[in-house]
Amino acid sequence: MERTIGIGLLGAGTVGGTLVRRLVGESEAIASKTGLTFDVRKVGVRDLSRPREFDVTEGMLTTEPTEVVDDPSVDIVVEVMGGLEPAGDLILAALEAGKPVITANKELIAARGPELIAAAERKGVPLLFEAAVGGGIPIIRPLSETLAGEHLERILGIVNGTTNYILSQMTEAGVTYEEALAEAKALGYAEPDPTADVSGADAASKAAILASLAFGTWVGPSDVYTEGIEAVDAMDIAFGADFGYVVKLIGTAERIGSGVNVRVHPAMVPVEHPLAGIRGATNAVFIEGPSIDSLLFSGPGAGGEPTATAVLGDVIDAARETLAGAQVAPRIRFSAADVVPFEQVPTRWYVRLLVDDKPGVLAKIAGAFGEAGVSIRSVWQEGVDSEAALIIVTHHAAEASQRRAVEAFESIPDVIEVASVIRVLGDRV
Image 1 (cartoon, one colour):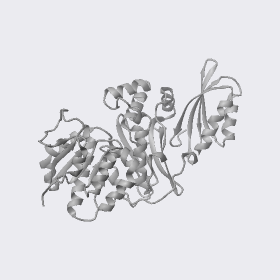
Image 2 (tube, helix red, strand yellow):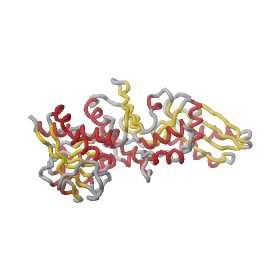
Image 3 (cartoon, one colour):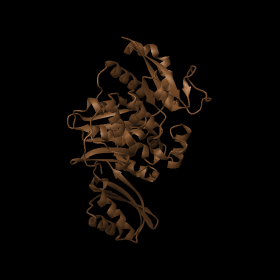
Image 4 (tube, one colour):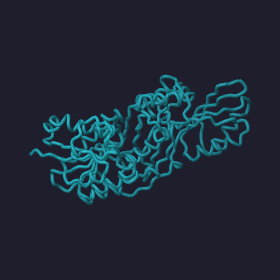
């Protein structure tokens, strides 16, 4: 039986505006597939005078977001305004009013996920956030439903298009970090203030959500070790290519014993790994488990059209669940588990040092690694007049041991500078 569902939007920027156009322009196609008709009843905006790329009916726009939540004709609330507040309290109010909520807000879900999910369960309404992690990539529903019975072991993700574009340009075009960032801004991949992207903070929120869904224990942003790409140097990208690696910003979530560890940092990825070929602003999530072996989800991770597609899918899903008239269970239940500190996780390191080019230096450096309990796998040296670039790749050892070794270099007079440190994925060299 066909029914019209009233939609209220909090935010009408790139994603919100695209969603309204889709709901209106593709209404017949949506109705033919789903039996549902959606009517945009209320849209919360900051500026009523700003031009819109969708038809505005009388009374549709408001600068008071609570009017969207409180409007009795709004059946489903869609939050695409971003930020922690007032978005968080508005979503909570909508849930408490018994209204399904769709959000693309990864920062908010990572920070207040348990509270909001508990409210949704208590009121028996859906809280859906497919667009919060991979943009147009369907990853939340597979993790929380399709793979709910799989004992997942590890997730590796390229979940920030800005940083992947920057690193791709540094790799393929040989440009500097600053030049690649300027290109990303000019193309609209990077915000005027790209700090959340290049610092790894955006990827950390997404990694926390992925880990929480994959392992059934909530991981907050403060539990994620985070390191950005600001220090990645073109020289290291070139050396990595010589050794068969591509540098990527990788979000990792994995089981460590009975606990979980989540981290975001640059990594040298072997060229044969599926993530190595993810170029430009594309995102990808690589999932490993005993029964599935591995799965790769890849596609556009940002932009109005891809993200609006994911949001629209959630809107349709929420409408179907609401019309079914059944108590809606949460996508996944969370239990307690230890978050393992990154210092305890076995890692491999690529270390580039600038040293005095004279006998005995390598022995002192090897001694520092040995005292820290770290074994060296490979060593390369590139001479630069009286100085030399010394490149070392280690075997697996606890992250804390790797750090202790590098810190010891400060007491070696012949070490001029620890130029860079990048973790290594896999065992190529």
